[in-house]
Image 1 (cartoon, helix red, strand yellow):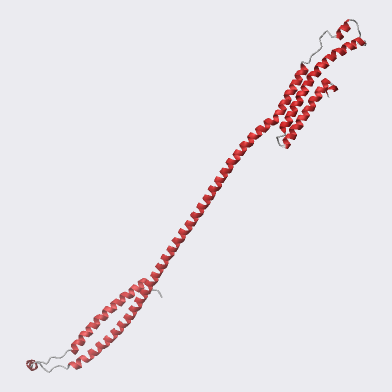
Image 2 (image 1 turned 60 degrees about the vertical axis):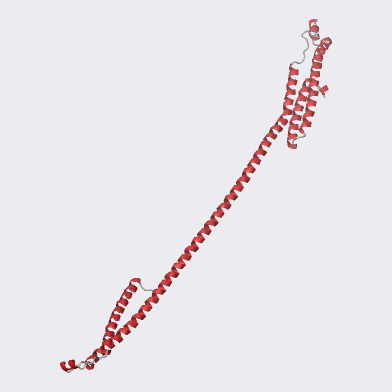
Length: 285
């Protein structure tokens, strides 16, 4: 059982005081015992003569000696009890010191363990953070590489789209040029002179029902028809050659684009041929 520090200190003080008193009493008793056991000097003749009858020392010192011996025994018992108490206190003190040492040692071991555990946890956390940082950097580098690759692919696709768009628009550009030429030919088609056969015949008095006037009108429109037919025939041949070249060039594009462009070109060709037949007539087929 562990005692309070102030109680242990008070008991130690009482033990020391009791030990001092016991030592003092023992010295006094020892001195008296030595005096009692000391050899008695024989009185000289002069002393015997001058002194009266000597007192009976044995009868006077016996009670005192008994009391002293009893006191001595009591003090020795007290000293023995104090020694036992002192030994118990010393053992308790040693046990307390040992307990304190064990506590200090356990506390020190615990602190060392906590410090080591903290350092280990810190190192593991730092290691994990470094690993995650390296992983993020690697993913960032991969993302940057993919971004550069996709950017290059995007530029290539843009260039290809521009090239394909130019190639796809070139047939329409050629067709528009042909259409413009057709309309220009139609606008500037040769007309018969003002003084045609029909006007001359009318000036001579021929009516609209006369055969001669019909012949004059036929001659007038025959000249116009032949001139227009020759111009449109040349444009039709040029359009056919251009269309053949465009179809050959469109074979290198994708099927869906080629089909769409060819469909538009054929529709445009049909409209132009219809327009040509409107002016030229069925003989242009």
